[in-house]
Length: 193
Image 1 (tube, rainbow, N blue to C red):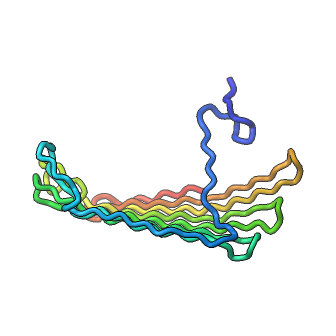
Image 2 (image 1 turned 60 degrees about the horizontal axis):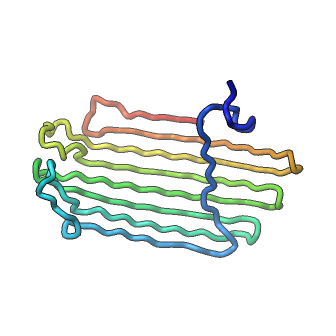
Image 3 (image 1 turned 180 degrees about the vertical axis):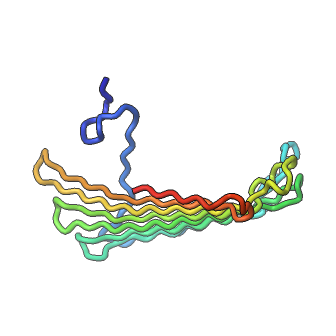
């Protein structure tokens, strides 16, 4: 039994998702985004099992892209920062969570038939008092979490003839988990190349 994918994807069974991420262009472009929420902007429903409301749930986003060398070399960068905090009346406790994401990409095309991309993605998640929303959980079960991940990828595509394409993909993925207030649990590192 053969899968539906062509030989270039290894003739597997399942699904394939192919994405092209944002690149720079010959014009500078960018955006700035802001979301703001506090306890005055959040509904407090009295019929909720766990009475809670957000005291802070903000997000900030900045994107910039453009040329380094016109028609040859472009850049793209994205920075996201999202701090949030919740207060739970059932446990009289507050948790907090900070999410940060950094994306950078260089795209080079020194001839129309050859294109190279170098990209990096970094993500940081820091949580304090995670689990304090459960009124039946002991305070000793609440935990802090530190999670980080990074990916670096290099892609090169060359078109030699109409039916001859060279495509090279190299990537490195690294992630780290740590629970600082649970000293009996060591930090976990994962590497994939």
